[in-house]
Length: 297
Image 1 (cartoon, rainbow, N blue to C red):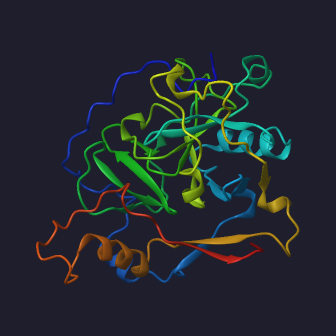
Image 2 (image 1 turned 90 degrees about the vertical axis):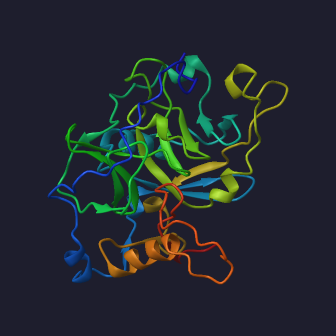
């Protein structure tokens, strides 16, 4: 069955909590200090997906750089109105919200995708988080997306942080194609086992409102006569009239503004903290700043 997120798999072994020396493609402190990039980057409307639900609109940014085939197929399905009227049919508290076609006969009419769970270390500007991680030798950000890296594997990958959009699959690594899920709470042990190809940049509060299933019954699939919340529509922002098209910006990196945002979360000097927390930042606990700059509500 391909409508189940994954039937069985082992946990990833923790790669150790000691950060490795930054590879040559990492950004140095001097480069950050001298960065002349603007404080914000525009999100391409081709990569901006709007999911209309009864609770409110959820906005997704696709990542075709890491997962080009997944992003392209998802965009094509959205443009074909395939998801309109479908449901979030498997929603497990503190785990994931899975949506899609659900019906096996319908799912099988669409091609499966070769997994894009990781890629060779690229020359993209990788900005290290600045402290060790439990699941990857090194973590940081590329264009606002949380990324893990390993020099020994010569690989980098997107992380299962809250809001990550990924493709559900069966046991076979290349069995996904239509059923997607949004991570509700960090699930880092799934990293490199399933393909993350986007993330929620606005409206995560509406994802959290989705009707839950019982994990102990049918692996969280909502049981009849109950049904999951409907996907009223999905739209690629590029297909909307410019006058009503929403536009978003993500904090640019490397930039001093981005480093300042991380420092504000890592170093807590507020009077409230009479016991100073350790100056450690969790990659999944830090939300890269995003702002909406145009479009009707």
